[in-house]
Every structure is written in structure tokens, then in C-alpha cells.
Image (cartoon, rainbow, N blue to C red; front, top):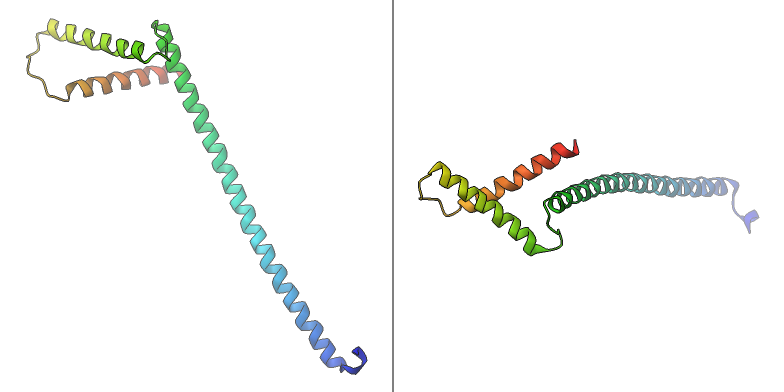
Length: 129
């Protein structure tokens, strides 16, 4: 049957087939390149997440060591609450010594607790350094 097709038509057919194959290969190569970029970006993000997770784990371990060093079990929530209550009592005693006026803002306990936590974090960061 190929003998019945004019040579110029065969050449044109081969030319069009080559262009279609080239177009398909180019599209697939571009898609493969995009997928490789996505994979590289995902891998980089994964490494950043692992580093962040490890940093958080280190902070948690350091805080646990501080709490254990103070004589409390980090898994015992009541002991941690007792530690915070003791610190609040210490702060109240210091206020009495300073003879501060008794009027207080309703959110002062939250602010004090937040400051205490920030001081602990600052101490923790200094210890990590």
C-alpha cells in the first residue's frame, strides 16, 4: 500500500508525525521539569519543617529539664499548677513588701503569668545559646 502513496505525501506525513511527536515530547519534558521543581520545593519545605520541629522538641526538653530541676514532674499537671501558684504567691508577697495599692486590674494575673512565661523563655534561650 505504501507504494500507492505519492512520495511527497509520505514526506509530508512523516514531517507532521515528527512535529506531533516533538510537541508531545516537549510538553512532557516541561511537565517533568515542573514536577521536579515541585519536588525540590517540597523537599526544602520538609527540611525546614524538620528543623523547626527539632527546635521545638529541644525547647520542650529544656523546659522539662528546668521544671524537673525545680523538683516537679512535667507529666504531672497538678505539680506544674502548684509551681505557678507558688510563683504567684511569691509575687503577691513581694507586692505586700512593696506596699502596692490593693486596686488591681482584672487581667493582671494573666499579664503576670505571661511575663513569667516570657522570662522563662528568655532564660531558656540564654541557656540554649
